[in-house]
Length: 303
Image 1 (cartoon, rainbow, N blue to C red):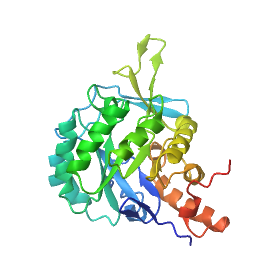
Image 2: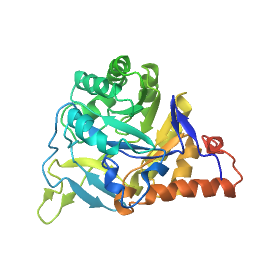
Image 3: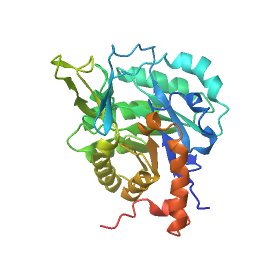
């Protein structure tokens, strides 16, 4: 068996497969389908300081080779997560990472400070790239200045592994990646969803209540691969790749492009066991190509 261990800053993963926030609930929803402990880690759904109801329905729509969502960070708030949800999932023998979002910088800081004290949570993913909220979210991730400001503020308050999730809805994602690296991020994850929309021609109305939403699934994979490749060449910190990963082959492609680890998102809705299959598939690829460690594959694209 190949050595699948990788590291993201001081965070050690038993393999490079993580589940993407918003697609895996809090993990326990998948207990009937897979052994969560096999994964490198899970990233729980977006968590905010106060409870959020999310956007009005309809807020999801199927598209060719993908889906649109405009859920809007529906969650019960960080205090309910810490006091009620985390006790039910803390037994997992894998990394539990919390995706953190906010409407203003003080919100991000407050959530990060609360999570900093939870021993069993070794990392957070700072979501500065959600396209489905009216304030905060993607607004922080669309310029170097705002991305740097929120990352620096959270870095001062949070002392464990800090991952910053980047938006693809920008002109130059590498510049923003470098800005958050310089501001103390231990890693960047990319890409979040692409901004898109769907129209019902019969009613002449948007399908989503919010008109636009986040596009994910296989259709965004070529864009995600290109951006991971660009960012991996621009920064020294580890890159976590996501966007349309449906199989172990997809995951390997992201690793070759420069990703240290990957996240599985939309595919979880199609096959609840896909993340485990990807772990097995990465191992099989390494053995077939006589690669002793998956770390040797990172950034090994020949071009």
